[in-house]
Structures are given as C-alpha cells and as structure tokens.
Length: 517
Image (cartoon, rainbow, N blue to C red; front, side, top):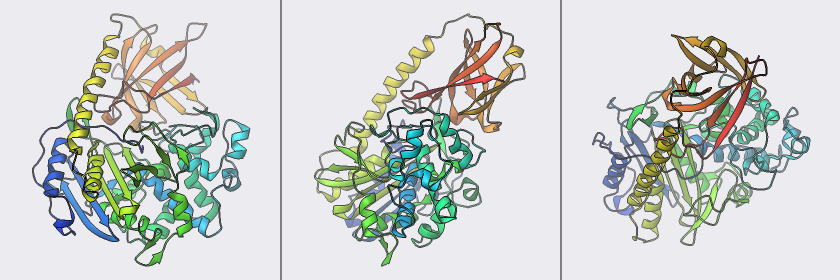
C-alpha cells in the first residue's frame, strides 16, 4: 500500500490480444496510442491492465488490455475491477472532507476527541495527534500494516488499531514525513465514530453512488461476488504466476478500495475543473478540495524525478515542466495502480494492472508530454531500462545474502523443543508446530499466514510462506539461562528492494520479538 514510484517487471511475451473500447477521438491522443500501450503491457509482462484519461471535463479514453487472469481468455475492459490499494487514500481524505463541510469534524481535531480509546505509546502523542497529522504522514509511526505486513488479518479494524499503543515511532512526532498506512486507518475510523456509518457504507452512499461509481466497493468479500474482476499475479522464480488474493478489509481506509477505470475516470473528473463537482452536483466544497490539494509536508528526495515534492491530504504533489501534478500510486498483493492529475491542463490519467510494474508512471508522463508538445523522451524505455538495471543490482545483493549462509551448522534443540505459543503485545500470537516432520509457523491463527521453517544456520531459520506471494523471511529462536527456548523474532520485510527478486534484500524491515507463553 505505497504512493512512491515502483520499479518493477521483466519483459516476456503475453497473449497479443487486447479489447477495443474507446470513448475518445484518436486525434486527441498520441499517435498509435493503443499499440504503444499494448507494447508496454508486453514489455512489462502485465497479464491485464486498463487505462483511463479525462480532459477538459470529459472522459476521452477508457480501455482494457490483456486478460483478467493468465490463461482464462477473459478480456479486460473499462469495467474490470482492480484493487487500487493506496490510491484509496485520497478517497478516504475526500470522505472526511464531507464531514468537514458539514461541521462534524475539523482537519485539526485531535483523533482522541472522536475515538476516545485512541492511544499511542507516548501520552503526549496520544493527546496531540490530529486528523491532519494522520493524513499527511507526520506522526512518525511508519509501515505497521500494509505492503508486506498486514497483521492480525482476522481481527476488526478497531482491534488492529488498539495494538498501536505498544509500538515505537520511527521518527519523532511531527519531525518529518513517514508514510503510514495504520494512521490512515485511524483517520478512516473517525467516520463511524462521528457519523455512525462505517467507512465502507459512507464511501458507497456519499461518494460512489453520487459519482456513478457503481462497480466500486471496499471489501474483498464483496469483490469476490462480482464478475469481470482482475486477479493478482506476481513474478516468482522468474515467472509471472497467479497468486492468492489476501483480505485487506481491516485496513480499508489505507488501501481497500476496488474499482474500475470507468469509475475512476469519474473520480478524476470530480477532482478537476470545478473541483468537488460532478455533473453539476457539488460533492465537496471548493474550499475543502483546495485543502486536499494543498502541499502540507515536504517529501523532497523521495523521487528523483520530483526533487521538490510535497504531500497533501492523500495526494503527492510536485511540478513537472512548470505544471502542477497531483498523484498517488498503490501496490498490494499482485496489483499496481497509478493516478496522475494535471489541474492546469484539466487532464487526468489512471492505469491499473494486475501485477507489479512501473509502466503506469510511463503512461502518465507520455500523456503529459503529449499535451505539453514535448517529444524528447521514450518514457517506457526509460523506466524499463531503470527496472532492468535495478533487477540486476538487487539480484546481486540477494546472492550475497544467500552466500552468507554458514553451512553445516546444527540447531540447538530438537524440533519438538521449538514448538509452542509465542506472544507479542503489539503483534499478537505466533505458533510453532510440527507437520510432516517439519517445523511450521502460523501467525494469528490464520491459514494464509503459515509457513515452513527451513533451517538456515544455528538457530536462524528462513520462513517459506505457504502463500507464495509472501515469499520468504528470516527468523531466529532464543534460549533463556536454563537452556530452553524462550523467544523468537521475525524480521518482517516491509518493503523489498524488488519483490520480483524476493522479499529480501529489503531496505525497510521491522524485527518483532515474540516471547514464549
């Protein structure tokens, strides 16, 4: 669940078909636009994707390419539903803006004023954190949930959020930008505590229905009841394969929206022109839309293409060739989404695909250059070459880690002595058991979070998750002074350097200790 540009995917050939449906006059788009998109899909080995464009208050493009799942021959079209992950963040911010318009909340209200049980580890932070702090990522908490780690998967949103009181900040409160999915979940939970409706129902009734977004929802359970839905894929061991769909509903406000390009075109139209209006209906006031789109905290240095960048309320903001850009991307298991808005051009472009890639960024820059009459760069090749270079470098790091394994070491204990229940105040329960003469770990009593323990060296193991989308992570056991197993820790890889290579190497990890009960 991430707004930053992702550099993903190697190129192999996929099925050469794509479905033709367009609402645009071709002379308003780049030459050979459809073929350029299809070629890019093949370059990035994306099984299925869809692209939408709005310009000057109208939808000018909505088209699908490829298939909803490898081998099923079901063509993607403009109504195919994708998980849009962190693009959901600006939808959550918009929902809160409606409550601001109605005088039910203010952006600078303390969260504890609306959620009385709200608690951070530090009493001062508990008292002072505001809705705005949560929405602009200046709390300092970091990636407690989302991306690789969605913990306590079967618990309610409130139960997950209550665990935050045990967690340390990564950066001092209000000292800078630290991207945090869990704080967006807190912001979204202000809605039921203020309005009485769940975040899910509020979005449907106050945003999706008025905007004609009738194929949009907030639940994996609802999604699986639909037809014409995209299925997630991931590169594993050099091959793109379908993967299991994980349920992220309890982190919904941070990244739980599922939508189609048709619906997202409507969303972009509401952002542009008379911002906050759709088909002459006012959804959100201009004042609050301006607040949403206003730069509020620096994110300089996070993207080399946007050295002077900021974050608003659910939007990354920067300038490109003298024009303002509002953008957000999203990544969850097997899906990537990219949305770019150029308010001075009244132009919006969105792409959703069913595997990780950076092609959506190339699509946006290609379209923007077209409308700025700039022709000096092949953006697809630019990002593709960066990806290939990154792949090579990360694979080298991966090999170095693998080669660091110390061979022919022994475990300290028999398998049966490692078994039992282990507990973390912040991260709940881990169970170690034996199945088929192998050690197995299960987190949160969730079958989707079960993996085989592969002995690495000494008392360090590598978890080979049964859900292959999760790949592998390292853990180790500890003994107490009596010589018995007393604890274990897991090094969760929150942001792999390149997931196509594997969950490690990672430049962003969280090591969690579980004590034996």
